[in-house]
Length: 212
Image (cartoon, rainbow, N blue to C red; front, side):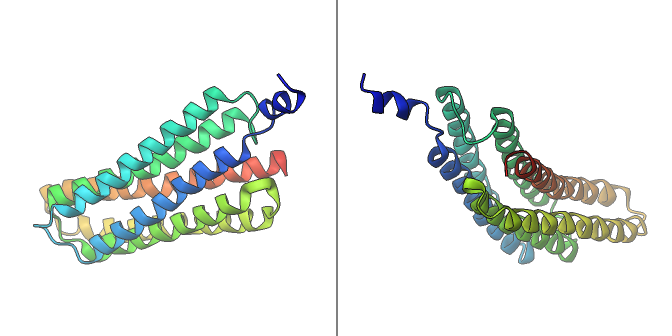
């Protein structure tokens, strides 16, 4: 084998991993946009809403699988293998919980449209910032932009906590136990989405600290 070919084997596969992470982030942006639009104008009879969200979730699963396949194939990676694994899993969790939110929202057909829409908008904004952070993570050339995006994601999670607290306060005032159980279930899944987005932001910040 030629020396050049040997050298290529041990070169970091930046293009492969960063391209896949960028594709995951773009998928989450599209998924969260469709999710927010569907929640804002929720139609209890539109089962297409859950089907499309499911399609996004399946695409995310496929991309995550491809990341782990590349992780198994490549000896040298652009940053630590454990960080790649954690980042891929955390991004996949966002899609999983968004899909669960859509599924239970459609299943329970609860009327808290305003509160759900506030949450879904924060989720979409967080996904936009995740995409910004991942785009700027490549080659660690713009770590300031990564950090700024992560700060915004953390602020969206804090705002989501406030939205949740106020919504639950109004919910419990209804004294309707069945409705409380249903609505609280949906809110728990929505909260998990923003929590997972914050987890991704924390992982990205740690990567920047370690490698920048």
